[in-house]
Length: 114
Length: 111
Image 1: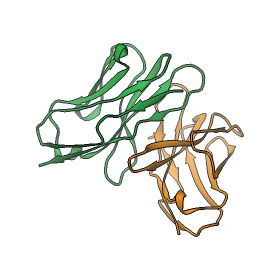
Image 2: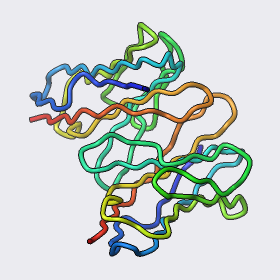
Image 3: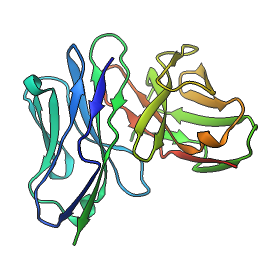
Image 4: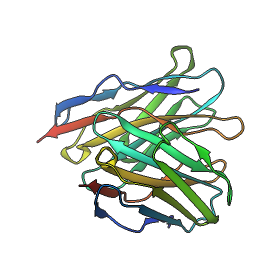
């Protein structure tokens, strides 16, 4: 069964700082990978996803993530954060054969101070 | 636009009550899911359904059941609510090769 580990539970940054949130997964086969974001009081929204192809994936709002298969990692990055990026970020993984559950990490709370 | 609608944003129920949480999607998705979200624990899968009348246990099914009589509707049932089921409940749906789309969530408090 797949599992996901997010290393940072809370991150505090100043505006314009660079962001990298770690995500590692455990699964023996081919995976689909996702980053979701939850802004305060709002529902979960997809930031970006990786199914196949270019391992560097670009998402909404200037976010990107790189799939490194040898490291079982899918870290989220943004070169310059804004106050409006304050949210909780979830990494998720799903095996791509048959019916597979979507398994989430425990989330990272990001606080961006103005 | 994609839409997953959960019937209630907030619910307060008494211990021992039977509780129904309803979820409707308008995207003709085959797969539907119920998660609960707790601080520090992320999202944990309770039950999922890959077709009408089909259901599978997730990681934490104890104390819950589900019903999927129609493709667009997936109900979560707390047979006898307990205080440890106080949580945020999230419904999601997806098709085979898409990401999951989430509803707004239902914050359930059991007193």
